[in-house]
Length: 106
Image (cartoon, rainbow, N blue to C red):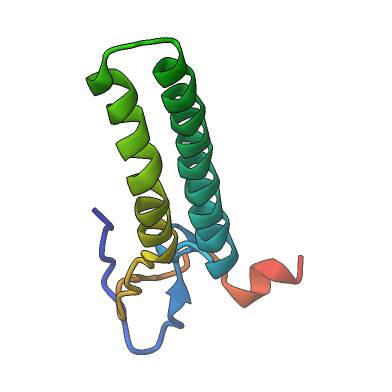
């Protein structure tokens, strides 16, 4: 939970780096990763369905793999398109301590 600091009117408002939401590029990379992992699992399920069906495994075993191979592309697309909402005002201002701009010039 972010700590809220009291802000005086004469002090500048500084954005806290720890309260900044995840960047768009990082969010997209995470969604692509989830998609690829899900589709990788789907490929394994497809291969396992084919192998278990040809080797005479029980119908429920190869059928389960087949159903997973059919359903997982839908799941992968839904997860890839699931964008987290960006909440306005979710960041908290931080009041700088010390000399402020004078400290930068040193």
